[in-house]
Length: 489
Image 1: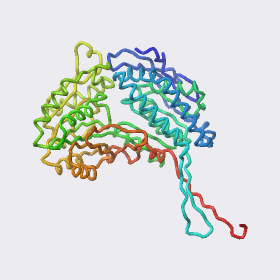
Image 2 (image 1 turned 45 degrees about the vertical axis):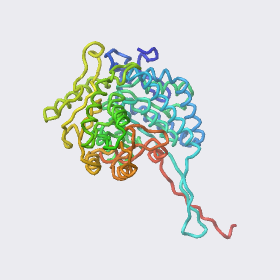
Image 3 (image 1 turned 180 degrees about the vertical axis):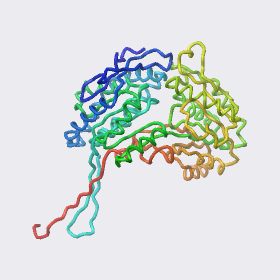
Image 4 (image 1 turned 90 degrees about the vertical axis):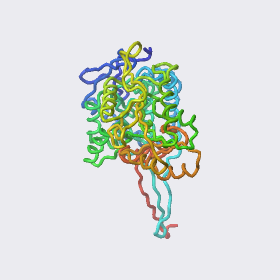
């Protein structure tokens, strides 16, 4: 276990590291072996209300601080994270069970995103335009919304934290981040770094606890002006319904059943590499993971045999020598095993994996074997419901037309990938795939700080983050008209 864990991962409220108001805690368990990493504040509505009050009190000064000055503060925070990148990565690796190299890569990505948004303080653009009235000018300016509630998931914890707090704060909002209960220390260390750097009290507040006990009160608090949620579609619908009752602004980044298409002219080595990475890296715990692999009939058997063989060679464990680690907790593991069992009962065939791993090194952890199935109907539960683990299914397609139809048949629309050497096929696929992201000859996952990410249908409500598009979530436009009086010129 890392030496950097706090004894208690508390709440950061108004610049202070505090326990829950009633002193209750829960254990933060390692998904690798079930050991207790630290204890965590089990917050409730009273704790959330205190954090919201602190954010509301800090908002007038922070919102009036110029975007350039806010950017300088965020630049300092990003550099503070960079100076402690190995500490952050150590915590991420312990809490998620992923390899240290992957945790460090995720941390560096979060830092890069922080630096990007710090720079946006110098580019908080509105626009000037014309007016239909003589002696009148028109323009728009960006303004902060107010208090932002931010709820993130534990699959890529430091990246998820950065995706929310940096764009929200550069726009001039004060924030309350609801940390994932499975990665509380990752959020806690960011709050600690901010405190050590003298970040303004009340601007960045962090609440620990369970979704039903701390997340729900945050969504329901009428002093929260904008709510950004990353998580399951089921919970996302509940968040949207609650915010709609008070016409609050909401951003939803939800799940996916992403398809990777392999055409008959694909570079097979490259397709196998990216199918393996897309399906199984991060233990399949990506909203953009490839849980559906659609292969042209003529190359299906050859692809299937090589893909299955490659999956069986994958090493599962928490070290840099392993290809994927555990899933985040036992509850998720049990859900995955049940989903596979139900699919088999309906006629699916297991080609690889299909069960939790046990035995030496696995018995106390939450490990799912890399799993491949075939014979799953396109409308089957496993084809239409996000499992969020290292589980994928193979489907046949006669041609590009049928492949595109299968891609779009999903109730989700987050990402898709096609492997082909034809610019004509790739162009047609890009145009017709009903997803927010399309990749050609690579994986279904991946994002960059300056590029928008998000999806259609059950994958979200149309908002995008990161990129400059995230500024539209956390700011509002004010139209300004100026009339000049000719007689005073």
